Length: 560
Image 1 (cartoon, rainbow, N blue to C red):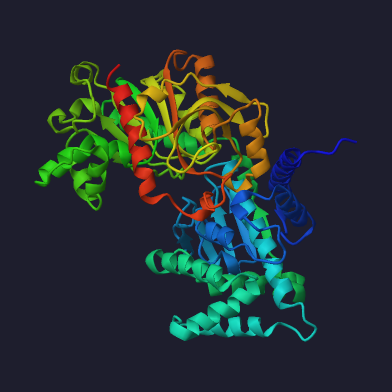
Image 2 (spheres, rainbow, N blue to C red):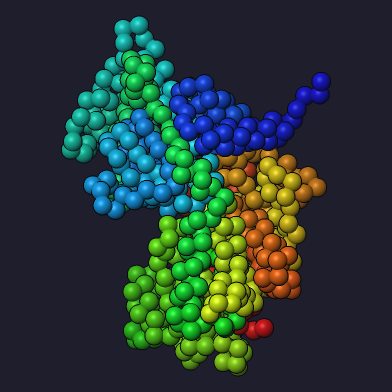
C-alpha cells in the first residue's frame, strides 16, 4: 500500500475532526477525556495546527497556543467542568454573568463557577472553533497532570507551591514573582524567559481588560480539573449540545433577523430604492476616510497630506468623527439580532465634498447624480458569511410586493493568512477553494494590482477558504501553495460570501454583471515561524494595507 503524504494525513485529520464535531451535536454530549474526546485529540495531534505550536510534544506545555486560546475564550473557562453550547437562551432576567473574550465576539454566560453556557449565533464555524480550543486545553491539561502527578508520593513540590501562590490574592512582585515564575516554568517544561513572556502577556490583558485570569490561575485550574477527574468520574468535564442548537444550524435564524433589521433601517432612512454598494470590512476605515478630514477640520486641526498620517492623527478622536459623520449621511446600527455584526449605513450624496482628503479621488458629479449608498457590514465568522449575505440578497416584501435591493457591487475586505509573503502584504482573489469539499468558485475580481501603489506587495491568485484558523496545518497549506492550485492565502469567509452571491445570481436577485471585489491584507503567514496569529497582532503594520484597500474600494464605487 502506498504511504500517504503528510498533507494527505493532515487532510484526513481535518475531515475526521469535522465529522466527529458534527456527530457530537447530534449525540448531545461528550467528554473531552472520554473515548470520543480522545479521538478528537488524536485528530488534532495528527493535524498539528501551526497555531498550537508544540502541542504534540508531551514534554512541554504550549504557551503561545494557550495565550491565543485565552484571548478568545471567556475568563474562568479553565475551572469549568460543564460546558453547554446552545442556540437560544434568554439570560437577560437572570443573575448569570455575561462574558465576552478579548479577541472574539463570542457570548457566554457563567451559570456557576464551574458551568458556562455558550450561545451560538454564528453557525458551524463557531462550534468548530470552540471544540478545537476545548480539545487543545484538554491535551495541555493532561501534560500538566502527568508532570505534577508522576511521583509515587503524590503531587510534586512545584504543584504544592503553585497552589500556595494561587491562594494569595495580592499580586506578586520582585523576587517572590521571579521565584513563582521559575517554579511554574518547571511544571510547564519551559524556560524562565518563555514563562515570563506568557505571564506578562496574560497579565497585561488581565489588568487592562479583565478578560482572563493570571497564568498561575490558568495553569492551576487546567491541571486541577484533571487531578480531580482522577479522584472521581463525577468531576469529569462534559460538553453538552442542546436540541435547539441542532435545529438552528443551517437555518439562518439570526441572519434573517439581522437582514430584516437592516432593510427596515434603509426604509426608515428612505434609502431602499437607491443604488446599494455592500462592503464587508471593519467599522472604522471607510468611515474615517470619508469623514476624518472634515472632523479634524471642525476641531481646528490640520489635515495631514499623507492619508496614513491622517489616520494616525485621528487616534482617540472617534467620538468627534462620529458626531461629524452623523451630520453628513452616516448611520451606525448596532446589531440586536445576536449575529454580532454591526452596520454602517453611509449616504454618499450627503458627503461634504469640500472636506474630503485630497488623495481620495471621488467623482462629485457621479455622487450627486446617482446618490449611491454604502452598507458597510462588520466581519462575519466563517460559515456565517453565507447566512447573512444570502438573507441580505433575498427579496423582501414591501407593500405586498417582493422586491430586491438594487445592489450595484459587493466588496469584501478581509484579514487573511498569506502563503508566499509576510504580514502587511495584500492578496487579490481570483477564486475561492473550499477546504474539505469539492466546492470551488471563480471570482471575476474588479480589483487588480495596478489599483495599488508599489509600497505594498500584492499577490494575485486563489484563496483557500478554511474551516477555521485553529485547524491549519503547514503541509496542507504548503500543498495548496506549491501545487497547481497556486493559492496565495487562506481565509474563512470569502468562499461562503461567493456561494451566496452565486446563488443570488442564479435566482435572479442580482445581475450576473454586478461588480465583485475581494482584497485581503495579510495578518499572518502560517508557514513562517514567528508570523502565525499566535505570535501577536499586527499593530501599526495593519494601517497601510487596511486603509489602502479601503481607499481603492471607495474610489471604485465613486468613479463608475
